[in-house]
Every structure is written in structure tokens, then in C-alpha cells.
Length: 189
Image: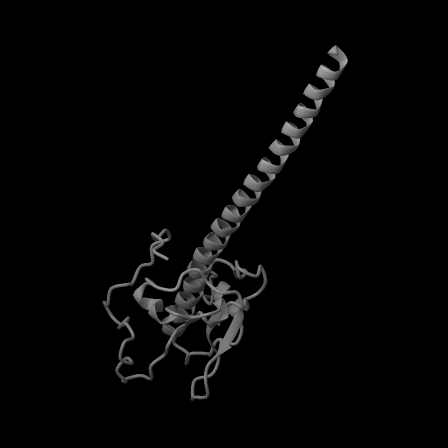
């Protein structure tokens, strides 16, 4: 009778081990989904940061003091190059950033048909739906309710000389305060 008793205990251990493996698999799947969501939110924050870097660099390109008439921005690479003869540090952006959502290049947005031609902003090429749907900084308030990352257009809206800024756009001329964007914002969605 002793051999039968040992055999039944080893069967119980085998079933318990299988049960533990199943439970661990379920828990690891749940943790994996949680990590995936966290990573997507971080890439989204980085998309906003990098997009605003491009937008600000394009704005500085259009406002930089230059004795010659302003040349329109035809290539984002120009933002990383110095325009001074002595090659001092006046590049407008440190380097060309990749789109953090896709890992590829940004889509350059050409100026709509008007007298000023060139690039006026960038956008992601991702068709994914963003987590963040509200509570954007004032500069990108128009992102609220957008259904795809590619709808988030980081643009510098130029106004002709002497014209008043468009309603709802922040006045950024002269001593107007710079609008800062906090790198870590509490998520409410």
C-alpha cells in the first residue's frame, strides 16, 4: 500500500506545478499589458516634447535676425546648421529627432498656398489612436479630440508683417512671455 500512496502524492505535486505555471502565465500577461500601456504613454509624451522642439525651431528660423531677406525653410536639416560665418552655436535645434511613435522620420508639413513657401511644421506618420485626448498646453490646444497621432500637427503659424495674430493664437512677439511645456504632466485620461 505504500507504493500507491507515494504515486498519488507525486500526481498531486504535478497538478500543483501545472496550476502554478498557469497562474504565473496569466499574471505575466497582465503585467506585460500594463508595461505596454506605460511605454506608449511615454512615447506620446516624447512625441509632444520633440514636436514642440521642431515647432519652436521653425519659429526661431522665421524670426532670426538676418540682414538678408528671410529664406524659406525647405529642409529640416537646415535647422541644425549654423548660419554665421564664424560657425558659432546658433543652430536652432540640436539634432533631427526621430518620431518616437514610429521610430522613423517626421512628416514635414509644407506651407499652405500663400506667398510664403517652405516647411511650417511637422507631424507624426503614425495612424495609432493617442491616449491623451485633453488637457494640452495652450500652444497645442487644438490637439484635443484628435483621433490619430498624424493629426497632431506641430506648426508655426506665421502672420504677415503688420498683421494682427489670428484669434486664439498666442502673441509671441516682442516681450511676450514664452509658453513653457512641462515635461511631466499628470495624466487625467
